[in-house]
Length: 238
Image 1 (cartoon, rainbow, N blue to C red):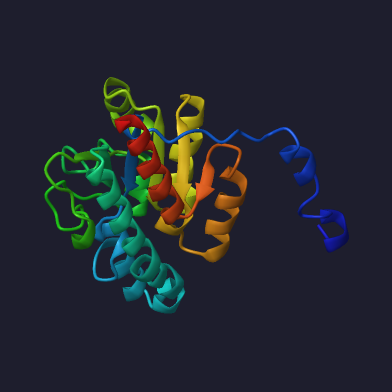
Image 2 (cartoon, rainbow, N blue to C red):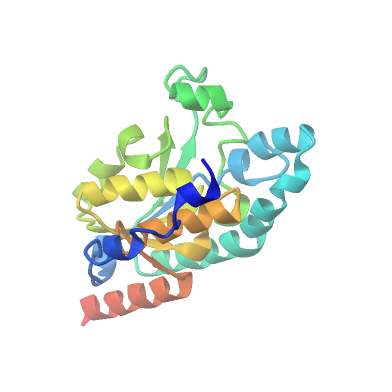
């Protein structure tokens, strides 16, 4: 296919957004939960798991954007988000990719092929130290990518009366995006803190954000979500 056959890459975009636009919604602290996806050593640290394998394969330069964003942007913003949710008593849920039985037979064929098989008690499966769970937080072990089909997350949110979720972590265009898409069909209101998510490439991150925003969720900076959460907590108290 030649350049002339491809058309404008934005063709149809204005038509789509003329009707596919969800309204803004209130963020009620007592009905909102934070989901932190896969911020584990296996997937978010240069010395373990996937990143270690990529570096050993001689592709360290190709990881520079991703690892820099994790260290400089995602982790600091997640620290603030997690602290804000704990302060108002709102649930914080973490996910990790691991095998409940240890050999990966309970994980998807895709994840086994990618080599993300590890046990729950391994270092790879632990959340990065600055973000580690505290008593009262919930840890979910995923057997696939999106949170809802591979954990009991929906059940936990429903029994806690949660109607709004803030979905963060990695990868923006994989587990985060998949979770937000399914959450929309499950009738949850969703927010994505853009600066608390990361993909392997700038384009992967940007494309996911562009399509999800206003369609399946509202994409906002961490600071704005914290402000909305605080305002919702204040309104509930009043």
